[in-house]
Image 1 (cartoon, one colour):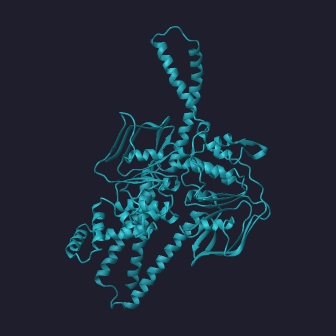
Image 2: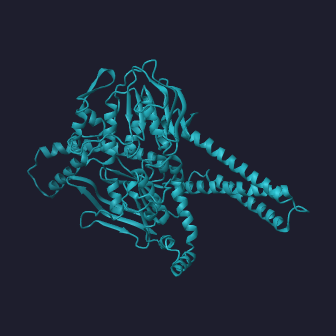
Image 3: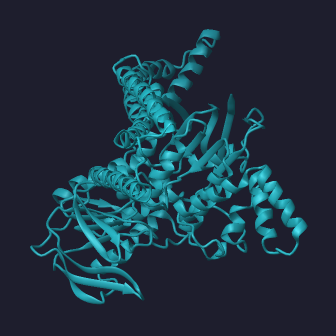
Length: 623
């Protein structure tokens, strides 16, 4: 079933054309991601599809299937400020949610028995009781806990999580997401990733989370110079196919340039004959000229700012402590940083990661212990909030207020305009006011202002939010070559895995554990520990059951013997299916979509097999 069709969709702001004559189709079950550099119009395209902005031109067409529910998560969700969290969640046309809303209202007037009986009957008819429990489960997963809190008192991150919870609760068939992982902690992201992998969901999203692209998506669209390029498969497929496209483009461009030169010579001779053939050739030259003039320029971000030398003593924490009231943030933390350390910081939202960074930079004082900063240590601190850029300032003025030129490696210097060009701000864009920049462009400008201070100790607090994948790739390359120290707080698992050598794990109550390895290593160990805890819990429940219910005479009951035989057959079938899936992976002609489908099925088979084997062992021991 076709869910969405775009035909000849065009959008521009003033003289800037974001995209022109775009065509797109999304069918039921597809999981499509849109990638592009900041300022290309990703969010605008989502808004056009969601019906919040109109397309331009008489031939533009945006068609969405009328019989499906659409859920749209904006970057900055908008709620009615006077609503409570619960009222905001229940503000929906979904019949089940309407019934729950009526029930919650009726609970305020329990003496009105007729009304109460009606809403209870409706809840029964719609089987809404389980749905209400699911609402509370989803809100808990996304750490939306105080249901009576006014929406106007929520932070930007809390509003984003509330909007995501509301969208999931409404269970739309077609989900449109704009940077869904921003403001989520790592466990929330993994939970959302698992939810979005459901086969029944159709998805169109903008995200910089490359593990999301790898594990959730089966189609990636790239918006490049106003045109859409479609790649079937996940992120690794996209990288491979994009590299091939660029090779082909380079070859074609080389041929076009040679042809352009020949045609240029011909046109300059200004032939007097203006017959049909001559005119056609002049028109063709015009098209060729436009094609060559659009040749791909070097647009990648370049970072090679000179870093100051670090001294022998860099940064030391000696038994530092910090609390806010009864809440312990740091309890007896000690560490001496060494040259070229790359440390990631992991922990749930609200555990005190940003406070910890401010302790290290001496922005706040510890309650006990001390922080010693080396004499040559220069911090470059990229904060979540960023700097408050003046909206009425031009981009070039923001940079020149910091420095007219920047020292580079090998004694070279760059002027402020040259530096901005390396950060993908063309000379024309440098004259643009800050108020006209996209969220990602503002982040990129802020990153430049941090690096211009020539730091040798970088502290990056959520640096990946709103940055495009091109910027992220080059930033990662720079960080891997950076000669100083780096501390990163990030919910971007791909970014963390690529950069860090070890982690500071915030375990709560002020405890910080040093873990050698990257985030994927940490989660693998953590998940194995969780599995062991579940096994131990099942064993304990079994032991308690055996103590409270003494073994029956004669072993198993007749019903249990039947169950044992059923389990043996089911386990045999699951093992056969596991072999079939494993064998299917060896087929070189298998499609990417089939690989993704089989991988999910294999995971489900393994889980079911483990569960049935545990039950079989339990019954076998009783027998």
